[in-house]
Length: 242
Image (cartoon, rainbow, N blue to C red; front, side):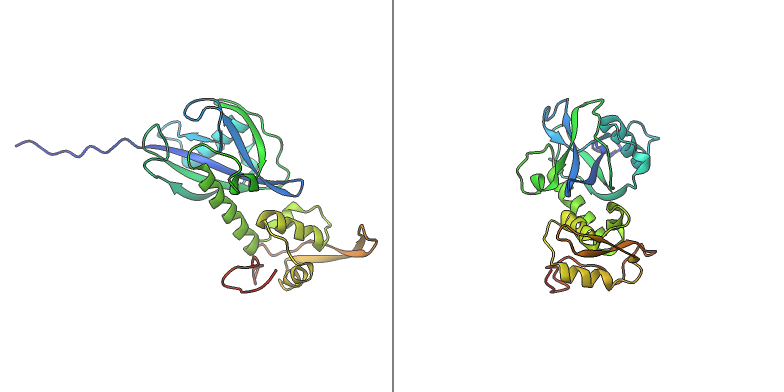
């Protein structure tokens, strides 16, 4: 009697990175121009295959970010977004990609390397509004990464990291507007921010605005998790206006 042995289908494992930052008060994502097939010349997220069986997913993510964009991944906090495994997502075969997110202020210009012909920062709205065509399913991955970043601003004090200390509430509001992609009512935003204990702390000084009015100055408080959260306008669970 012959044995029936199950042969697992060949599946490759890769990582992709959604790296976000603010540039000129707009949310940008890091993209590379692919220097190899498939999709040679197309824009894509930095990423690639695991190098060897002993390499972890996070090690691969750090290595690919350094190799393809010249960024020091050690200064970034990477968190997993999701795994993407549609059978037709890659013309080379069955490839599952684990995507990572990092969002940080002051990230430098990238320097392309390995199989990336170029690397640069691209405004997120250009991708979310489908004005640019990306390789693979990277538009969907970016959309998921941006949504994760928007949720992080609702529940954490991350936004203060993008403000130079001391900052005004108007400057903090511009960070939320850039990441959320919405305009906020200044009075409602002021009320929400002031309603979160320990989020920001007044310095006791002020700065003249462009209109000549004094604006109070603040610094980041001790809270890293916001309670209550600062929820985006239009979220179903709030029913609040901006």
